[in-house]
Amino acid sequence: MKMRDVGEILTGIQSQLSLLFLLTLDIHRNTNMKHRRMILGLMGLCFATLAPYCWGQSNYPDRPVRLVIPFPPGGPSDVLGRSLAQKLSTSLGKPVIIENKPGAGTNLAADLVAKSPPDGHTLLLMMVGTQAINETMYPKLSYDTVKDFAPITLVAASSLALAAHPSVPAKTLPELIKLAKANPGKYNYASSGSGTPLHLGGELLSKAAGIQLVHVPYKGAAPAVQDLLGGQVQLGIVGTPGVLNHLKTGRLNVLAVTSAQRSSLAPEIPTVAETLPGYEVELVYAVLATAGTPSAVVERLNNDIHQALKDPEIRERLVGQGFEIRTSSPEQLGQYIRSEIRKWSGVVKESGVKPE
Image 1 (cartoon, rainbow, N blue to C red):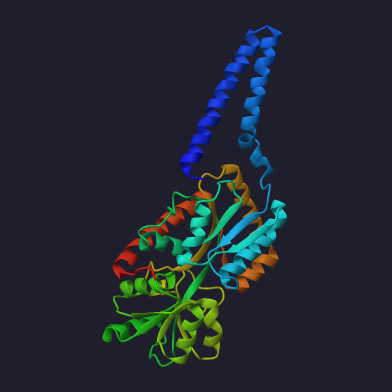
Image 2: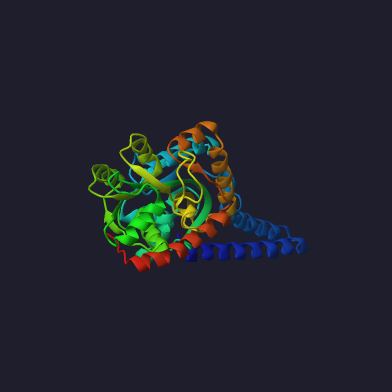
């Protein structure tokens, strides 16, 4: 349902309320029993028309809820989504069904939710950075990331790591910057694909440090890490949990994490921001509904998701996967999405990255 359709519905409701008001006045003025019955019949018709809009949301949800995930089963996003769905199924009293819909850089899933009825029965687990990048990288998106969604809440974030093969003669980020400045274009870095936050996180790092690193895109994180371990690439921007075991065995060096704060998984590793103040790149996840979803439904989902994320079992599972629990109000999430679009817009344009 489009916003124009929602506007037409609201206009209809307003008309029905006006008619009810006039009929109420008329019924008090008329003493003719036949006339009164006719007016009461019209009032009943008006109430029947209004009921789905005025009282229907108190029954939310009245059927299973879909949580659409823009990535294949088995990855971190899937683990996060299924953990949420399990708890929400209990609190909502209806099944929350996971629908994995990968493709087109997460745009297929976003398009599905943007064009769903605005009733809270179809939700999107959004990776905010990816969606913010897409807003600039895809000039002809079929939806608007700001206007076509109703923000509900942030749910989690995970940091990335700047890892290096042991053959790179740098054990810290300042040493790498010095090395790269002395050898422009000599060092490359792997990411899980062009146009991803991992790729553009590297572009942002190069710009902030005043160095030139060559990007080597892969189709997913696993082959990127594999080639980094084998020395086919020298550096990599990858998920922090995925490289910590290799750090312990000495097969990789982790120079820094990209989050604003040090990772709880490895607090001994410094942040990029400790060398380059202001730098911050995270994989941040949020839940959104379709624009026009009633505020009562948004508030219900916001509260239920927050309660789910307080569950000790859920928290332990997600922290073990490298997530940091992070929640927000709908308004705070909306502001964050807009700030991420502004942040990545310039990076996308400067890098010249195009959709694959």
